[in-house]
Image 1 (spheres, rainbow, N blue to C red):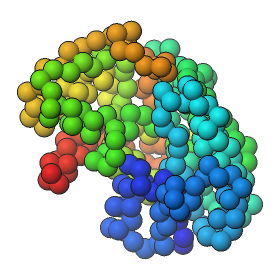
Image 2: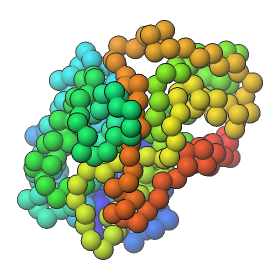
Image 3: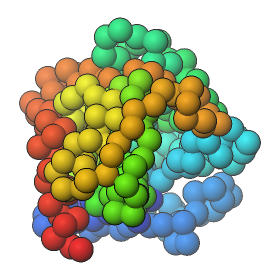
Image 4: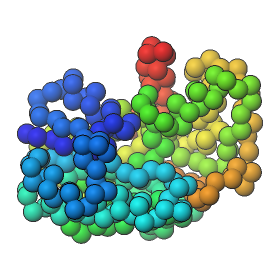
Length: 286
């Protein structure tokens, strides 16, 4: 069994690599932009024809939310056109496909957690490109699995957790938005869920939400990081309007996990337990 992971050096790809080392009963191939640049659309079929994977886990994405406001063309290539071609190849070559998507496909105006059938209405170009990717993925490979997640963090790469740690180490005071709410999700937990899905005896195609459990603001998240790590930095809460960002963010990004829990007999990990686990890893490595 050959499993190809695109975006292999990102935070989710790195967590999958760690998992593959523990349970190495398959032939895993982790690619990055240098070894398999999915923005080179003409090369996608050529590479996959040579590689011939049995399963593709697409973690590669254009994730610069604010930059996408000025560069939708490139975001659309990576997040939409490339995954559409990958989905088409996988469908034609009896290859299973798992594609990672995002809560940014929703507008955040709901008062209840979003489920997989709720209306999508992205607020920014990044979200639009990811939604087009979801649509293209299902159109070109109806048997694919799409996982929508939110507020992903890890000990690897640049993310809210690692950025907060770096900033708090050098700052006496920081400002963090307190009116955007979501579920911080440890990429290590998502990696474990992906392994569960691909090793399940029956392949259940469709869109699934997966996040850690929790409903907190970025301000709350920052304070939990401060408390667990032991920083003394003062964190000032500010509104979204006070914190300028080019791309509009959703005020509410909670995802309903009922479908994935019931289909695969799994459970949501508590965000605080997972955060403590991840911070412990970072502390042990520093």
